Amino acid sequence: FKKCKPILLEPIHNLVIIVPNEYMGDVMGDISTRRGRIMGMEQHGKKQYLNAQMPLAEMFAYYPALKSFTQGRGRFTQEFSHYERVPEEITQKVVEAWQDNDVQ
Image 1 (cartoon, rainbow, N blue to C red):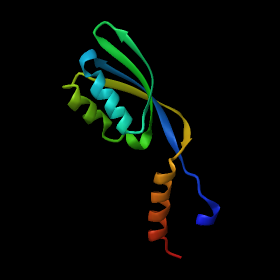
Image 2: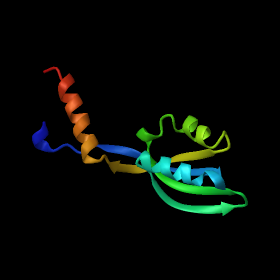
Image 3: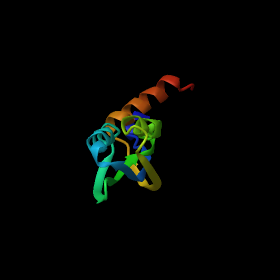
Image 4: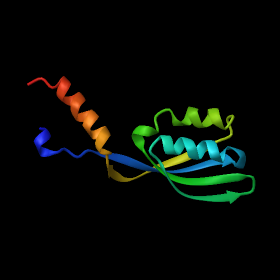
């Protein structure tokens, strides 16, 4: 199986994250730790609208995390964007786990 050099794809979602200005640093740091990419920002009054892309796998438990570090004042919308190749180190872990559980 490894000879074929498997490539895994994962769904990527577009996000619009709306937070008060004072929480932007925390939000941007969290996006980075979740393999997300910041695509742009817009200020509307005292709030920032942050456009980002993030793998769906990294979004589990994102809502409570966002609420936690914005004191309940952050919110977001999401929609599917496209599929992207999973990073090599994650692909390798998935393949190894699959091989460990493979019954032939």
